[in-house]
Length: 184
Image (cartoon, rainbow, N blue to C red; front, side, top):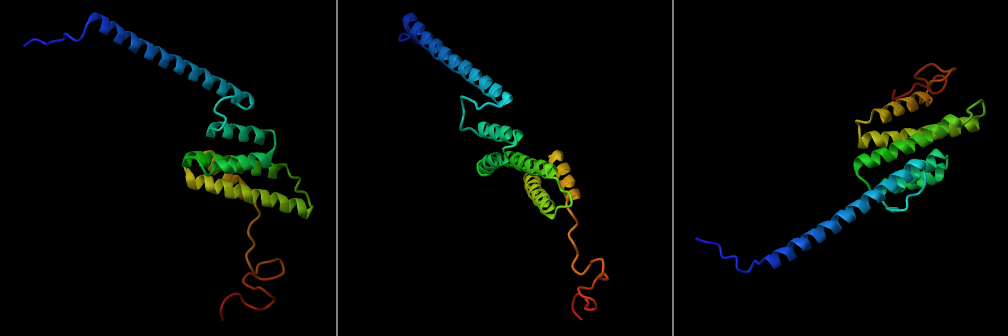
């Protein structure tokens, strides 16, 4: 039994191989162009400039928010990071919450919490915001030890929650001088 390949001539075979070579060359050129774009993107991110390609990608927005936070533009960075919490995977959202926590934590550490109650309240507020962000990050990705360590640090800096009825003048368990806490 012989194969009848009468329709396949040398000329048709040459044209077919030439077409495959042309399509392959176009694919290779496209991939080389894309690699150059990725390298330019990575270079722009490393030096803190907005990338010229992929401007609407998650990575571009994340990098822009990161560099805004590095330059201490916390409000703008928080807005960008908050927008990223809605559109990405759980591990990416965890990274975003980690960075939001870092921003609040660093800002709280820079507040001069001397004897002024107003600055102490501001520092406590910032630490509570950092704690909330770190807790969200840990809920999304419990394997990040950096986030867990920062959460522990923030919690150690926060004042203890006062127990009702306990103060310097009252005995524990007493809200007022002689009214016991709880049911009779």
